[in-house]
Length: 114
Length: 110
Image (tube, rainbow over all chains, first blue to last red; front, top):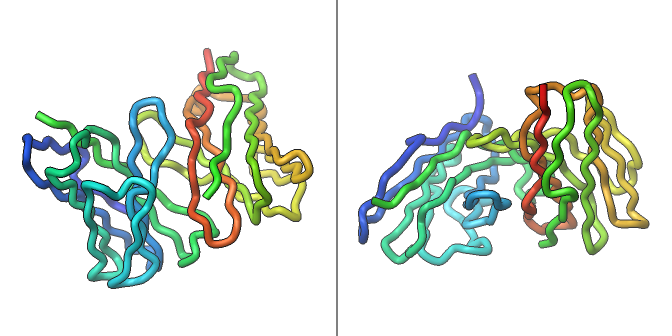
């Protein structure tokens, strides 16, 4: 059963705490992406990775960090520097490193601040 | 990266009617993609249309592309309650990244 999985579905963060969102894919895709979606809004790109051990900042990278140690995994850490982290986080992958083709999305993680 | 702008922002129709959503963009593109998002879920890819194509079909979906007007439309025929979702277009050129607008929120009333 192939696809993209994200965990957890809901995540609660306390003030000053770092939290990590998981994204795994077994589609053998090279490129992976993290997006943030605020209520009633479109998606904004946080980070993306076109190949293992390499990643690039997107439009709103401040307060976030990522790693790409394995092809199938692209975890996102929301650091304490991100002052407004409450949002819906979506991970995606694509077989095309240049990102010109279809992106496949995971089910998302909703992050809430306590 | 450029962002597509969907119009209208919200659309409410009766089940069985056709729904048309539009997307406009500013610069030339290589392809344009349409995605659907059900409430609280991830996006699902619907159709990719390339710049040299004018129309593409997939089941009840029909996408048109007019590069001279820098616009695209998504038509859903014989709508069903399950079509209720937000629909996003994503125009793409070269090595740019996909950028998603605010989408069109489609509601199908029974």
